[in-house]
Figure 1 (cartoon, helix red, strand yellow):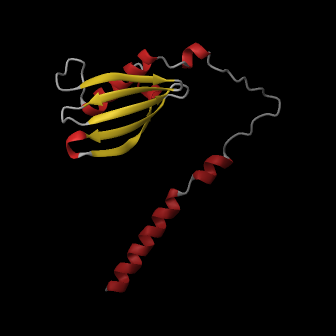
Figure 2 (cartoon, helix red, strand yellow):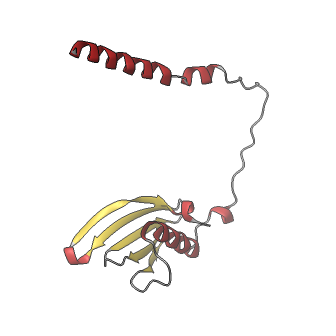
Length: 138
């Protein structure tokens, strides 16, 4: 009885795996581009990609709203703009639990490294990265 169950399960898995492989058909059916087509590369202007302190603050507000339920009217949560050095902005978010999330935002790329600190427990850890451009205009 065990052999029949094992053989049936093995057959089912094999059928599922065969049905999942359709990537080669998609590649084969894709038309080849003609040799004389030209591709225009458009670079965004520097004013469109320049990250200002105000845009960085807006993006951090949107991120904290989405992640922690932050609103500017919150009495127990706030965002502070910290130091600005040559290549990054620093901001600090305080959650209702008393923990702080520090954002170190690269001015050129918008990549933000996050460090979470819990003063009462003397805990500090890297908590990930985001790109602030993903949180603008939300």
